[in-house]
Image (cartoon, rainbow, N blue to C red; front, side, top):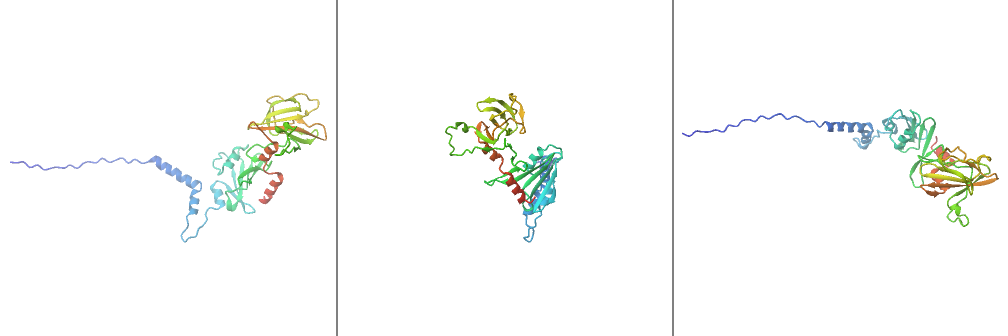
Length: 307
């Protein structure tokens, strides 16, 4: 008698799987969303989306832009707007590299910054002002090659950068392409500066004394101004006629120091050699490069923006 076998299937018991949540991804999404809203990208996205009916409504005006950058908005004359900040601690919240640079160089602990721009083009300022221990104003002007740069209202110099001053009330010998150097070979490496006799001569930039003494032209002093710039002033008379001592090597001289005087004549000259990165540069070229605007042009610019 055959025995019958029947197949018996048991139900498998499934173990519950543990749910793993991507915590790191969730945090990254939250941080990204926070920054997206914090820096005003959400408002910009809303402006790009047309509303039903085909009519666009501008939500983001210059005042809301200023507020989104943690600034205080002020309406000015002439269609200008002003966004202002009091920088108490970090400068990283400021919306512009130039603003952050100006704030980081402030001498006080709570400088005030002002960004002034047309209300219809608030991203293109006409000037930036910093209220520190003093008030510093920087104009944003366009060069002939259509590039923008900053100029200090106080001295007309490009900012940031070196700001050399005129060593005296002078007129430089004009060196042009057809200048006859025959018999004047020394003019290949120096400029002759003219002024009223016995006028004091000052350094073109602050610097440290490299050497000083007398040469075939008269008294001289050579200075290291940093930024790979040196200068040598020669053909001078001593500051005091009875003074025969030289400057000390390593001595610091600012632009108010007197390094010498012109000869006691109605008009006299001394010689200036400026080297940048080891190469001789004409004083007139260096001065024009660092002073793109003269006082008349600065006054005209300020009048145009009606401030």
